Image (cartoon, rainbow, N blue to C red; front, side, top):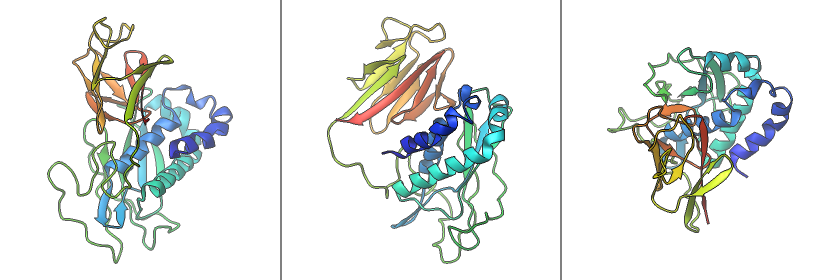
Amino acid sequence: MGVLKKFEQRLEGLVNGTFAKVFKSEVQPVEIAGALQRECDNNATIWNRDRTVVPNDFIVELSTPDFERLSPYSGQLGDELAGMVRDYAKQQRYTFMGPIKVHLEKADDLDTGLYRVRSRTLASSSSQQAPGPAAPAAPAPGRPGGGYGYPPAAAPAGAPPMPAAPPPGGRPGAAPFGQRPATAPAPAAGGRMRHWVEINGTRHQISRQTLVLGRSTEADVRIDDPGVSRRHCEIRTGTPSTIQDLGSTNGIVVDGQHTTRATLRDGSRIVVGSTTIIYRQAEG
C-alpha cells in the first residue's frame, strides 16, 4: 500500500469528524501530502552512496480563507503530515538531519484553494531523533511560481562536506521534478506503462504520445466548459510525463500551482476552467 493511501486512511476518521467542515475548501490534505513528497524529491541531495538527505522543516503557505479554516487544527494536521513525510522517506531511503516539522502559514497573495510549499534542512544538535529542533535559519527570498528554498543548515559533526556550489541548472544530486534521485530504487521491470485521464468520472485513455484537451471538437478530449480554451493544454507521455499550456486564456493549475508547464505523476490534479482532471499512470 502506498504512503499517500495510508495517509488518506489515517485521516478518514478526522475528515469525517473534526475536519468535516474544515475541508470544504479546495485544498485537501492529500494534495498537501503529495506536494511535500515532491518537495523531498526535488530537494534531495546525495551526500554519499548510502545517504541522500532531504529537507526536514516544511512550511505550507495557504490563502487567507484556507488558513483561517485550518489554523485551529494546524498542530494535529502538521503531525499527520510529518508522519507521512517520515513514511515516504523510509520508502525512498531518504535521511534527515533533524526532526521533521510541518507548519501552516498564511500567504496574502494566494487565492482560495491554492497553496505553496517551502522547505529547508535544519540539523539537530545531536542526532536525527533529537527531541528539540535546531535554531531556524533565515529563509531565502522565494522564487516566483513556488518551490521556495531555504539555505541548508550546517552539516552535523562527522558528516561529509557539501559541495561548494550546485552544478548549472540545479543543486548537487537534485532529482528532476517528479522523479526520484539516482540512489532511489528503480521501479521493478514490468509491463508497458499505461496513461489515462479521468474527467467527471469518465476515463479517457491516452493511446498516443500527446493528448490535446480543449473546448474545440478538434481536441483529442473535448471539455465543455466556457472557461476552457479551444486548444487549452497538451499532455505528453514519457519519463516523466508532462503537461504544457497551449496559450490558453485562463491557464492551468497543477497540484495547486498556477503554471504553464509541469511534470505529472500518478494522481496529479489538473484544473482547467472549472473542470478538474486527474492524471493516472500504471504498469500493465
